[in-house]
Length: 352
Image 1 (tube, helix red, strand yellow):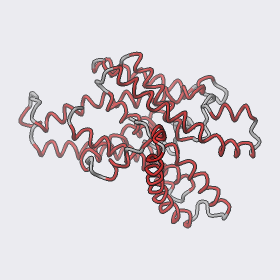
Image 2 (cartoon, helix red, strand yellow):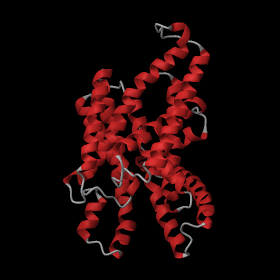
Image 3 (tube, one colour):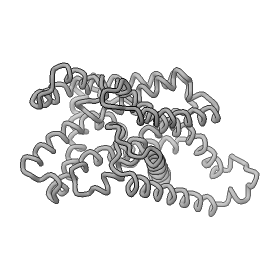
């Protein structure tokens, strides 16, 4: 992972993930149902896989240090969310106790829904840190991934509305853990492929595996297969999934679609993106967008519903300009405030 180009495309992949998350939430009330199902089939798994990918082989101390960097923004955005979402919840008749539990993710629900990812990622990093999985051998990581698949299925199978598995999103952590560990395993295989292209790895069938035509064909074949499997299992067979809501449909198709969609997205970023692109620049503010988008989304949906525009062409026409303006305004406002109050940088920790 010391190769600068590897870090470059990871930054771009984070930026792509940010765009997918924002689009996915806004597309929920759009006419473009296909794109909403497509994004939801893998966008959360994509982030978890990237996090596991970048952490594989790193020392345990670095993993635990990064955990603190995402917990602080989680707590900050939780408190910032309290006034608005607490007021809206009181209007809906929610009790003060329910509001308090939703504020701190006690029952697996949050006012500021997107930041559930921060809490679950912190839990995963703590677990992997205690087990030192990032430093383990490839076979150990592979077996751990297999165990996590079974644990995720059990958590999904036996989760009920009042289940203790909802406590602090523990069930979501078990479901998401498999993607994080798969990212760790994938990083090792990715390094072998990069070594083939760089000429630093000497396989048994060196002539074939070092042939540029084979490498290009292998990449294209893998991408097409991954993209096709994602469309079949994530859009056609098992639609409308959500890890945050624990709506996964059929567990196996959900896993296949999520993994394949993530691999296809990673391959696009690896091939076409670098550190100087807009996606890479956007990635530096990934937590900031994760924590602020729901404020804009809540106001946007209220206005669309008030004028009966939800699910109409007008909704879709206004949606994209709204997202673009939100991204531009958030970046400008954050940089302006940071120059005057340096402590605000706590809202933009390191996501993966």
